[in-house]
Length: 302
Image (cartoon, rainbow, N blue to C red):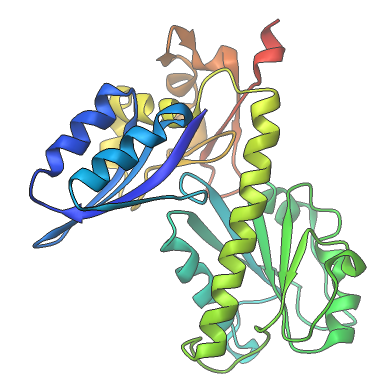
């Protein structure tokens, strides 16, 4: 298993930590440089994290675990219409991105209204393509409780946010974070920042638990390795205008190429001696017909 970490330090001698990452068999997932600082989002084998910490200390930098890196999270709102105040959902999505995750905002077609809200199968399938779903709901206790049918059948972990204090088990959610709701402004005040930090901590705990469960029956190939290999082997990836042409997930990757045109090319890529189509389920995503690659566990080839 690979552990995702974030290194922050000076530009001077930063090549030393990059060389160490390569020597350990790790990868640089993202690199951001400023005039005097550099930030690296990296993936290294779990047993070698202490070596990265020692090198960071030597270079007077800092390194910390980033459980949310290489994950994809859906931020779901009953509607993204302006009259329903989507400010909280927007700020939740933006704030989570600071911790290395890729967030997608999803507005339900008929999610508004306590008595008439609905979620259809296509929306449910789209949400379940992610590692975690965060439902951004409103300010009234009764409304949130009556809308629990929107998420109680979702097959991935669900965090619900709203204004009142509610016990997660009472609404069939994995977790509930208060302090949000329908707020007609950006979430910049002290109480809003504290709520956002609590949401990040809750998300990290759930993702870490999912990683532990995956370690009991590991994937045949790490999604990080699949991502790096596809970036190297697929020339068409260079023509994708999206900020992240390939998005890592806990159990696979999302490739932002048209499924019908590139399915066979993706399936025939050789990763660590395996043909990708033989060790993964490759299907059409509900999001823009992208290619969704879900890697099989090791027990599937025994």
